[in-house]
Image 1 (spheres, helix red, strand yellow):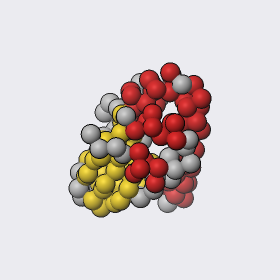
Image 2 (image 1 turned 90 degrees about the horizontal axis):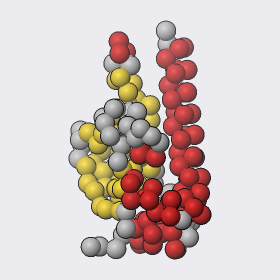
Image 3 (image 1 turned 180 degrees about the horizontal axis):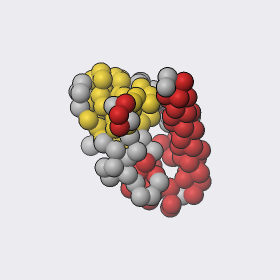
Image 4 (image 1 turned 120 degrees about the vertical axis):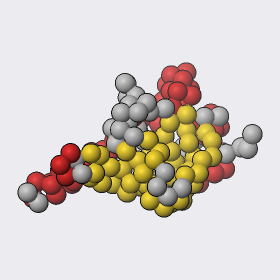
Length: 152
């Protein structure tokens, strides 16, 4: 199995994480490739992974009923996709559609949860990183809501 620690350390989500933690989480990592129009996940599906994006672009969307699909955010290189694996009941809240071929590192959520439970210091470090992501997604959703309100 290829050692992905070097690739992980280059990603902004991981780059300043301690070497001992990088070594631990590498065991949860795998390389993935998605092509344009691939659906990475759909709202309501089981959330089992998250993705560190290396190249390409992904649209995060949800069904706005009579307004059709509404794009919340576009995720690109250096960003992270997915937090729902972390929060029970571990279901995706959006659709993730590839809009430009993607190369990413997929992280197994169950594997990482177990490692974080075993090492609370690492767990707290990861939680701080994910809380920033949650805040970013909340702000993106807020902007879209404001846009929807002002367009009606």
